[in-house]
Length: 316
Length: 316
Image (cartoon, rainbow over all chains, first blue to last red; front, side, top):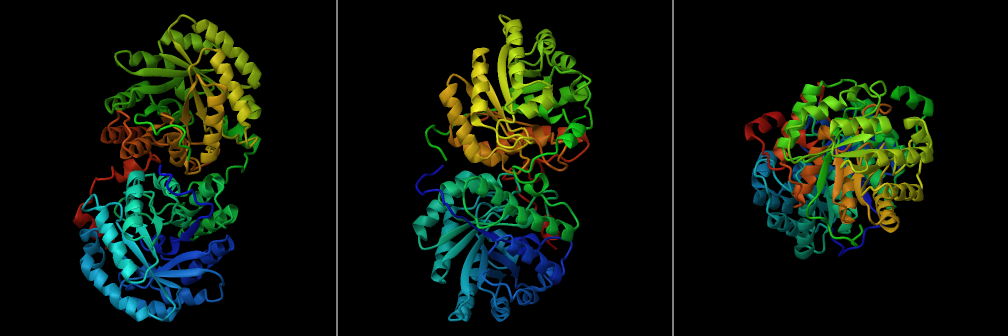
């Protein structure tokens, strides 16, 4: 643990279930169903969303309704809507749709970046310059996201310097926030410490967000490490929606309700109401037609006590 | 996080899957299958087992072969075999079977203790005196286990003083170790800190073991808290075997391979080989005829890299 920063008393949770959660799911939700889920999350107190991606509908059909989704939520006030954009065309669409921020994403490993967006890291960064220019003066914020920031499923370990170099490039683009993506669940507490310390050295103006996957079961242990480093921004997905298409049974993002449960029990304010969040997770589960990996939604909050008779019978 | 104790460099993991894991499972393993699983775990480097319970075979039929199991493992050297005993009769059977230690268990909440062993806490503790007398001079160690140490599914919060009072009673019985059981997954990082600090005050001669369930997804976050407090003993179950009979889908104990993965990645020595442990988990899954909740066994260790072509196909 690192005590150089105090534990945050307030944490910002960004809901990424509609984007990272849905993009790999076999079942595609209608825009109407997505809107219902978002509204349930907003009712629970969620105020920051990574809502969708303005990517090619052919590449990610589940998110083909990006513009319609943003439009359908126009009446919702006090919420920040963010969307991923891969290129200038996507940025133009996002700008027209009326998002609050665009997220420019690149992998810290060449192999993953090539497989994901078919170009090398330098070419991705060069493309970002054009996007940033397009958005100048639009009022739409530019944010960065670094995929495979803790390891690459093809290359293995990822040099912390590669993460730092990309972070500096995001600073040059005018970004104030960068998300470190644990794309396939390779983050560990020592890697969290190493990467955060390095970013604080090379890009001190950036506020880092931690985006963990629970692929190997230690997503919330990594959050504990992040908290001990004073990090107050995390990304999670309702119900733990998502997963990894090439690792059956492996979970995807850490579940929003498990994260909010942990933070709330630690006395850290998230502005999110846990029972209402669990209700939203129930809706997500019904919409997807399957149980989701989140634990708190199955077991209930800590003090949801058992009915004695039912338990006695079950122990039989 | 609490920095009053240094992070341990070595952690002892006690495997409780054969006891806590199997006791509630619908499928009962044969003694032969249990032996095969134990041998696979020993081959992976596991050296401490809570192997079974010497309880009434009618109450827990899955563990009816307690004596046969201990006998079948007589040839295994350098391993500590522990077993739960509820009463003098159980202690006599455990003594005859040849275990290394017996675990005396009592709940920190009256309601749970009454439902579990049909008597109040004082009556449980009084019974322990007789057991301790029986074991005097036998060479069999007496250990304590406190169930519902972080909360009771019937009563809710459990006063830390109740845990401390039981711990002191265990000291009087000659115990040097006590396990704090998170029976239904109600432990949180602040409760871990509160309970450990209290035990260090009122029973400083006791070495506490932390026994977490992952019912609400934060089992390993609680381990992180325990590590920050300098606690070097944890109990877990292979594959996350077990679960809660009255909460379908809720996981039971934290999974041994997820725990060992976390500790190993943190540079903490467990003496356990992760790939071999994952193999043992595969055996447990085959024996139980179902997927187990452990994550690392699904995803593989951190640097088990993907085959590029397979991934490209899966990403479609």
